[in-house]
Length: 259
Image (cartoon, rainbow, N blue to C red):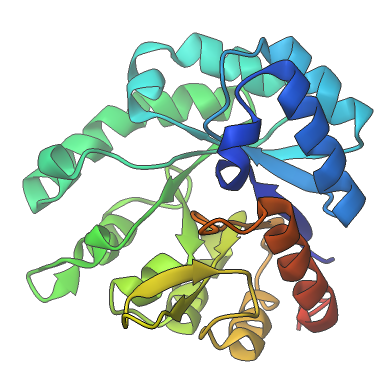
């Protein structure tokens, strides 16, 4: 079994605010060779039209990012959308750090999550937590993310690692993949380089400083269903060209079968 390669559509958010632009964007994504998308930051496009356009272009909706506010206050509609899209995986893109980035806040999050996860599970959908760098802030000698993993069983909570944000938080992507790979249906592949001002900037996968051979070898050992390429900022370069560079690199270097 090989993970399917998709695009985290946040990369293309300027092209997903109306149905016409989305149609063109999805066509270009499929033409590059990607098999799937992760719905994120779309404009006010009816879910049925999103489904129709993805089907038209032969793209699976492998996952989504949904705001924590919608999970808490609009869950029935969220579930209805995912059933319509035949999408089994959803994730929260971010929870407000000011409210949850403490050990007490972690407990609040888990308490709020339990009924949400139960309803999703009943509909055949699992819930993943997508992190940034701030979840690597330490409490009692380990990152907040580590406390989350230790306290939340995999039946309640999956993890969606982001390779770039692990490094930005001071972690090792291989260590974290090996730690949570058994409970990770979705993985974000994101690269970075350093510019002339010595600032970390996003880059196409394979064009930056990430150690992709060891990262991809580690990922291949786990039953990850989708690898989603994401580039938060292309700095004036064409986003589709950047996605093509990532795709071409991964086609040459991705480990095709689980070890």
